[in-house]
Image (cartoon, rainbow, N blue to C red; front, side, top):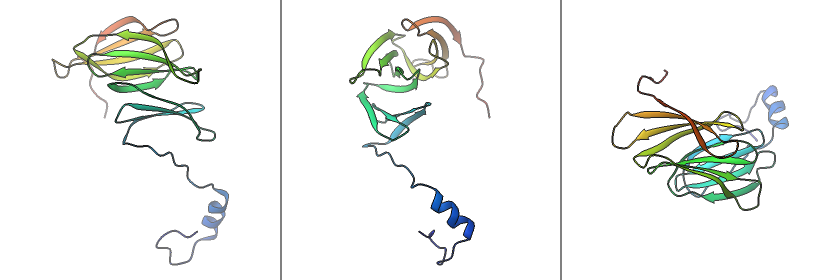
Length: 166
């Protein structure tokens, strides 16, 4: 193997590295990838048509897949479940990945005039969720959720004073 445009010569250090490296891994999707999350042993990818695929990192084998209507975002909460947020009306779903066919373990209906725009699992018991109001541009709300027994809102905070970093 020679890099394109190398003219047939490659430095010895590059040859050593190339011989020791494996071919790049490739995961194919039927449509554009909208979101990707890496966990210790899992990769979860969301395509633009709402499909979520859970893939084992060690051998890139697909563990499961599911289609979530109006899925907007997701995060891996543990090896056991993934939390998925939706566009308006805002809902959160916790899918159990321990079975061969993913089942909704918990569901939480939120404000019908909001969309879930971000989900972040902090640990196996706490999840953060960001809601955007459909009727008021720029109006954001942060929810802190307990996801240990069910999806339960612990507190709500207006994000009106927050500014993006960068």
